[in-house]
Length: 396
Image 1 (tube, helix red, strand yellow):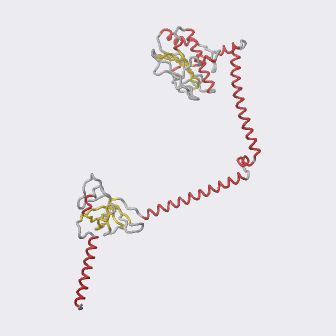
Image 2 (cartoon, one colour; image 1 turned 135 degrees about the horizontal axis):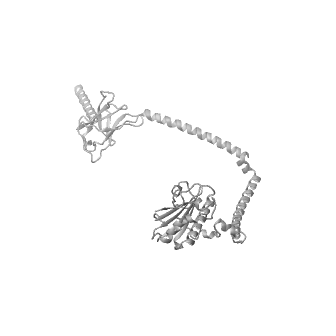
Image 3 (cartoon, one colour; image 1 turned 120 degrees about the horizontal axis):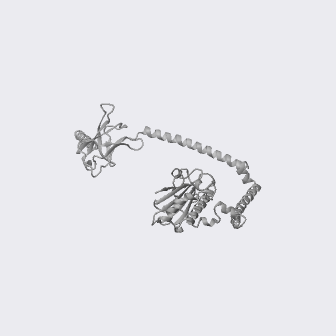
């Protein structure tokens, strides 16, 4: 081959390589494909440069055409993108542009999310939403804070472990109450014997209380002491539960007579009626008017033992019921008792307590007995002492 032919072949090959490079570079820059432009804006582009790639759904689909700084300090940086026309069907007005990094320290590129099917298509030059880029400096600052917190936590754990080791060493050496109990078998045996003696003492105390109650019931039947219990206002404790109920009927009473306990009973712990005539108005109403159900409700003041005050109110309710039944003609099966025990100052006289005769209309039913929670006498509501001043008063 002549020299001229070789020179011509070289020139042709060079031009072919140059043309291929132009087409390759132009293809990546979308110079020879149909494109459209979109814009977005950021407070900070985080190193993004013109010519960077644009990915839609992870697929390279465009390039960053240009980046324009704002004209005023309050404005944002505007990024202009060239996108392949094939993305026009998946990028919508609710698509979001974000600046991502290739790997941990790679180049920045722009990523655009798919839009929703119900949103409208974007047009040439439209703005789409953006989200702020993740700054590596912020990430490193947070990581540094986490490491500092971890070091403090590790120091606290080490300190707590040292304290536990110290306590364990003292216990092993027999120091302190726990160490003496663990290492001294004789002390442990004595403690077991003491616990057994305490349990036996409790059992004996319970048996003593039972014997005392039985002795008291026997004393009530003794003719020499019977007058003492009769003076107190009752003779048979079984009468307390014969007509007692746990709660009031539903609905409001048709009539209510309210008294202060100190007006019907003398002392704070007395069961003996001293002013029976105050009950006559209520008894007359029961005898002369039809009614469905009546309840004698008694509460005590705030002083004294709760269990004793509960028994006091139950006995007083029984005594009042007995007086009404014996002195007025009505069906004694229609009247019951309810002892409430100690009540707050809002519902009972702070010194002596309050008494009510509640009369419910025809058709009212006696409430069924239900278990009462421990320490709670009843959920019934009674009149306040202010409403009960002046002795027996009727309330329609």
